[in-house]
Image 1 (cartoon, rainbow, N blue to C red):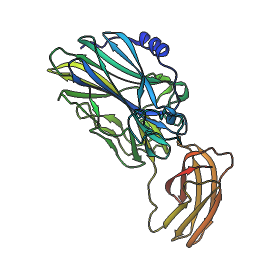
Image 2: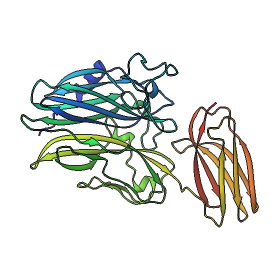
Image 3: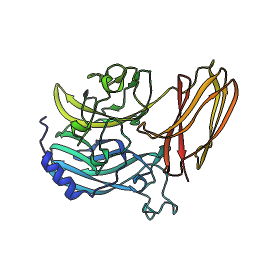
Image 4: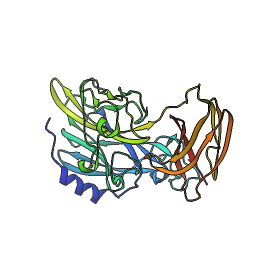
Amino acid sequence: MRKLSYALLLVATLFSMTPLQAADILAGFVSARQVSGLEYEFTATIWTNDYHQSFKRCAIDLVVFHNGTPTSINNVPRVNGPAPTWSNPNCNIATSLYKAGEVVKGPIRKNVYQTRYTFPGTGTGKVVFQSFAREINLINLTLPELTNFNAETEFDIIDGSNNSSPQLDLDLLRPATSGQVFNFVDYVSDPDGDDLTYAIRVPGNVNMNNYNYPSAALYGGGAYGVDANTGEVTWNTPTAPVGLFLVSIEITSSRNGSAIGFSHLDFVIEMDIGASLPTDLASGLQVSPNPAQDQLALNLDVHQAATVSADLMDLSGRKVQQLLNTAVGTGSFQEVMDLDAALSNGLYLLKLTVNDAIVTRKVMIQR
């Protein structure tokens, strides 16, 4: 199969056919499943930050290419999650097609959009979803708000034979812990049993000058890479800062030794620090309330004299407020910490340091 070079045509087509949409996307994948003959079902699965515009994104637009000729499919409905209600006026509640999306954690939402399309003949098919700007809290992508999101799959439409693109099997928001090996595997499968090979890529529409792979040199730890045959993504004991890292994989489908399609998968590694403190140092950590409005209460049983500090971080790992820095003795320690009135609603990380040990807790601010 020959990959068609549509770069300039694609950009022009997408911006003429597809309205600019919200700056909220974290990760995503597009698949094409052959229903029968020339009829295909397209699925776009997108992870978004609900504190931006994703809750309003009840439908998206796709661009479908057949042998290089584009067609726009507008208002592809979101089909997962609960049915919309009057409390969600941003969705069209007059039809059951539009769902409210599925809350994954905090403000992060999984959105599945689906439609069917019949190609006019055999050849090369391609499905693209593009949106204006990405989620802003990405550590290894500078100027994400000025970088378009792009997910696509391309496949041969073969006369008398089935050929669906790889289908998504796992969520694309992946947790990782500093100092522990990160592994991610079995995230797609091919319904036709075709051979799949994998390679690291620069995410779609990303200028390489504005993007860094999650490398050991920049973010600590060992090598980052993907196994070409199994697709297993590994980041060996990273010491990266807390926050969100953008990663992308190219998946090539082959049959009888010939490539018959490819898919681009963007996912996010959510780096966190250790979940617990050494038991000889402290225990019984509680942070409340959560969600919080104006204050956070910290409760901790300290087993040896220590210096305790608490910093509030955004999802990019940037400190937005120092809440506490004090020396404490052994025993029960309690502190009520005032939150800066200028902090906006959203998900934050509370980084608690007791001597040299660090632990984080996710904190939602809702005012």
